[in-house]
Length: 145
Image (cartoon, rainbow, N blue to C red; front, side):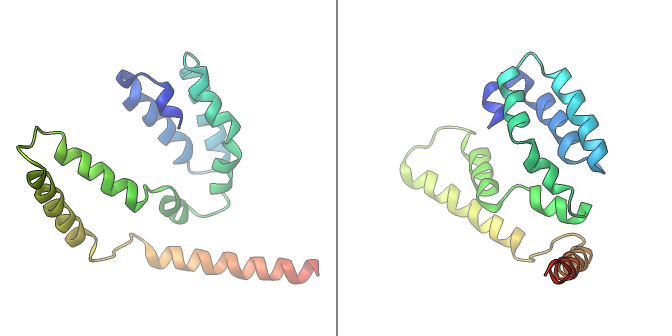
């Protein structure tokens, strides 16, 4: 939501700065990166304000390990498909509707092959971390009761 308040010439630099915030190794590093981000992009106060108001959601990511965080903030499948469609359709005009539909069908088949493996990097590590969090949560709940 914040990028709509940034001119297109600054998209790459803006998103690169954001990546340093949510991709930080620790919560402390995240806060440091966020302060630098706010100073660097102060010329776009509305865009920065979106992040200020919602920063508690970013902080919640750091309750989990780095492998889990990467899965959480990775672009979801629907956005990925739309992005892929935009890439193949912006190359030119189409003589008719069927030409466009054929192109989208071919791209969908390519994406289906790409995703058919279902491979998620470090999945065994993620599973172990998630199971560990569940065990800790159960112990805390028992203790509180």
